[in-house]
Amino acid sequence: MKYPDLKSIETMATNKFLKSLLFALTIGINSFNFCIQESSAYPVFAQQNYSNPRAANGKLACANCHLNQKAIEIEAPQAVLPNSVFEVEIKVPYDTTKQQVGANGKKSDLNVGGILMLPNGFKLAAKNQIPEAVKIKNKGVFISPYSTEFDNILVVGPIAGKTHQELIFPVVAPDPEKNSEIKYLTYPFYAGGNRGRGQVYPTGEKSNVNVFGATQAGQITEVTTGEKGDYNVTILNPSGTKTSQTVPAGLNLIVKQGETVKTEQALNSDPNVGGFGQEESEIVLQNPIRIVGYLAFCLSVLISQIILVLKKKQVEKVQAAELNF
Image (cartoon, rainbow, N blue to C red; front, side, top):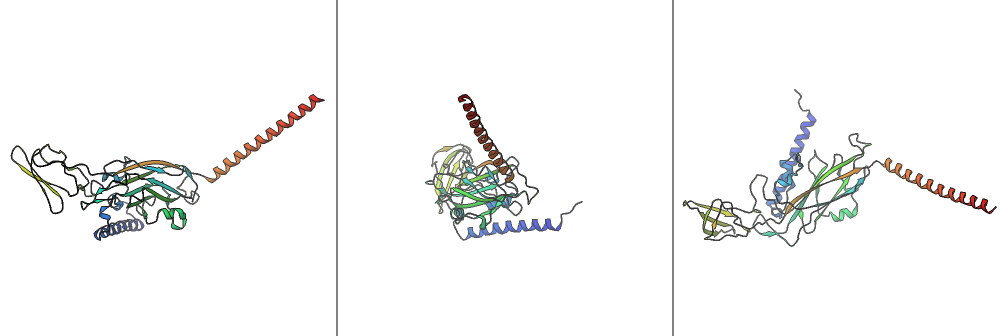
């Protein structure tokens, strides 16, 4: 039986400590009302519950809580050189005039978040490697590796969506000359972007960004409003059984007293204005020698063509001289 070595145990312990620390910081900020309770996405929840955010079927972990689908776009170079710094941009477009229902039931602007799964060896560029123009665009934006184990997976958010619909990730390419596991190949990479709050909490409970259905069929005998703005709906079924259920504050109730409803019939309109999207693309880690070889080939073809043209002109002059003679 093979036991894990000391280094592996230390690495696992470090990973667990960092995840716990990050989770504690998030909860702490939330407790002091730094407006994060209104946010759209918590990467730390995915980090706490999924060691790898991409499932075997290709689904990213964010889609487990953000159930609505919205499109995103990826912009990245087709090919990069070793040790070069480049940008991967995830566009998360949405209608900025729309607002979401916050956890406290009040309207708030949407926040955005993103995840970028790069090939092994590709990492977040160091501060001294990032161009000044990118630093200005990313002012106030904190991008971090998913974990110490997966430093090729980057996460960002939640951040204000009105000013950050384009998420820019500065990335540095690996060098196969320094790492034998890296090859000059075409690699796939995956990206996800989210806007708005999720419909399911990591615990499996519904958030208030949902449509709440009637728990039984019958007639609505009473609709009352609580102190916090939530609704209490009482339904009487044909057998005389009463049930009461709560519709969270901030939602638009679409039923009223005296109406008859069916089981699972919606009691409120759909408040979800956000959604999650994911895309994949490819990037080529290009060998500089191949580029030099290609340029040399192009140069040799150009020189050959010039020589042929000059030789043709020379032959034409000789032929013209012979005709005149």
